[in-house]
Amino acid sequence: MKVLLAGTAGPAGWPVPGCRCASCARPQSAHRRPFEPVVDGVAGFPFRDLPGGHRSFAGGHGLTGPDGARLLYVPAGRTPLDVPVCDLVLADLLDGPERLGLLRRAGVVGERTQVVAVGVDHRVRSEEELARRLTHWGARAVPDGTTIDTGRPPPPVTPPRRTLLLGGSRSGKSAEAELRLAAEPYVTYVATGPRGEGDAEWAARVRAHRERRPAHWATLETTDLARAVREATTPLLVDGLGTWLTAVFDEHGAWEGDRAPVRRRCDELVRAWRDTARPIVAVSDEVGMGVVPATAGGRTFRDALGRLNERLAAESEDVALVVAGRLLPL
Image (cartoon, rainbow, N blue to C red; front, side, top):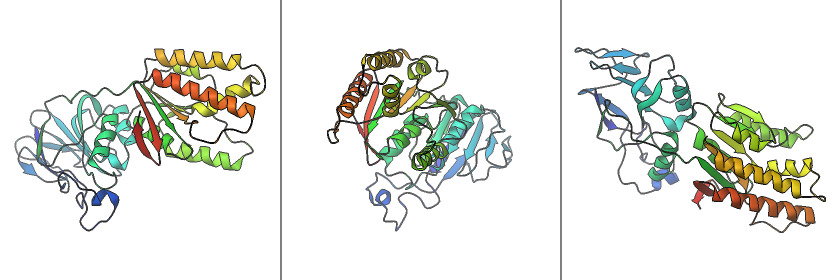
């Protein structure tokens, strides 16, 4: 089965005519037309039974060709899970990349499934940003007019195994970390900070983070971070190293006492990070750009976290600084 994508954008195309947002105002290499698939020479969606052996499924969102190849379209707001593994998935991934994780979890998307983003529009700021996100999600975008052969395997994607994301307060580093793993079928979110008992403002922050994460992710609350990394059976998102180190200082009374136990815990974490076989994304605070802490304990903490960031960065394939939601690769 061959699928011609005459158009790959949302209903209004991209850039959207007359729109003054930053995405639509940015010069583009080409205008993307509204989504229009042409399957074996026949245009139109929803898909339908056709003479010659094409059979629709999933309420017209899927089509099985005479050769047995299966095509599935996943529009915004819909995630068909009760279907067999497909050869090609055309999905609006800007509506929620976690839906691709659910499709992988349900076995709809397998290792040989091609995943192509459609419905793309000014929800993403540029073609370059679209391509960057899709690389992390194991998907790709193609120009209008591209023909896809469902019999071909997807191009190989090798995401980094260890990623360290640095940033200041409210920089967008946690959202970027979640975006990196959004399309994974299984993820364990390692929460290292306090739950917020007795602190309404902190509890609201924790709740906002929890509600933003995909509902099918598992959560592990622990300060034994090295063990969590060593024993991981799924990709990990660690948020974050600053709250973990604060807890370690508290556990060992290191603010004004012996800091040797803190150094040992950091050494243990670096070894586990180096040896991990699972993808891991960790969030940490960039502490070198703020004011000098007023207390000796604060300065010691700043120095310890800075050294930990430096050591983990040296053991990572991908390190970036997040500023105002924008990524600066390091």
